[in-house]
Amino acid sequence: MKLQEHIRKVLREETNIIRKILRRLPIEKMDYEFKSSLNYMSSIFLKNFKGNPRKLSEKEFKRMVIIDLITLLDLRHHLPEDVEWYEDVVKGLTNHYEERMSSMYKVLKKD
Image (cartoon, rainbow, N blue to C red; front, top):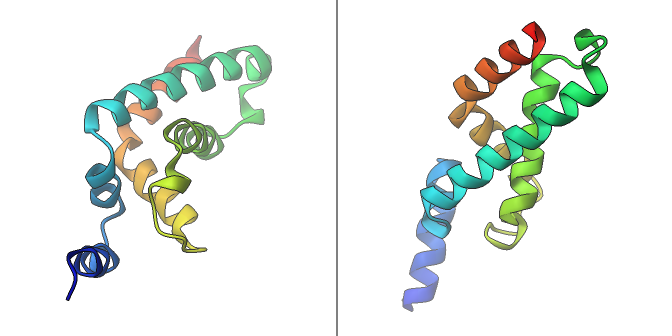
């Protein structure tokens, strides 16, 4: 079996989406871009939803942060051409950064 085919097989068998991402991107880059996304979406929240924070639920806020992160990391070019990968990545990254996003959302709602 060619090395490239073996690598593809191993990557297909891997089920942890965060591990898949970290094989392609350094954790430092992912964390840096996460902070950028969190700060950006926090400023959007304050601008657009400060008058009525109930207009944007915590779940929606988290999804916006993660979607921005996926865009910044350009993950479409780093992951397999699988139709279902997007929601798997959203879920995996949401779980990975859950506490930090929840903390920020709570702070934003109090301000």
